[in-house]
Length: 136
Image (cartoon, rainbow, N blue to C red):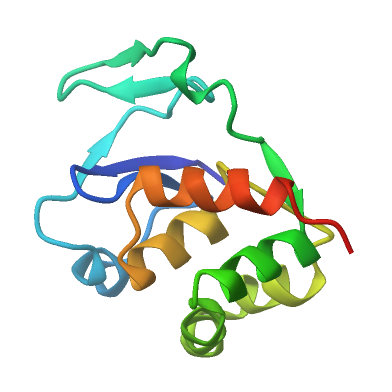
């Protein structure tokens, strides 16, 4: 498998585990471009290269538990929409949603849900920050 990176100015960065087919590429929003893989958390796409950002993203958790993620979505009024998006998604996304113990901020599942839910990077970061404060 070869990973591929993509970027959209309103949505941010996501990556796939293999080359997306024409049908998947056509579903990406206008303005999406293929980019080199992101070096890691705290890097921003400048339009031509990855630039390491300052410490502003340092407080965003790299992962949260499945419960914390779902609770944060519930509190934001997005859980029903997220579950509907997962139900319409590919099987791998459905398996990740139901079986993952933790959700990583940089995961393809999170990136795919962000697109469907219309959430930008800041909104996802805020949800991860909120989720990290929730305990069962």
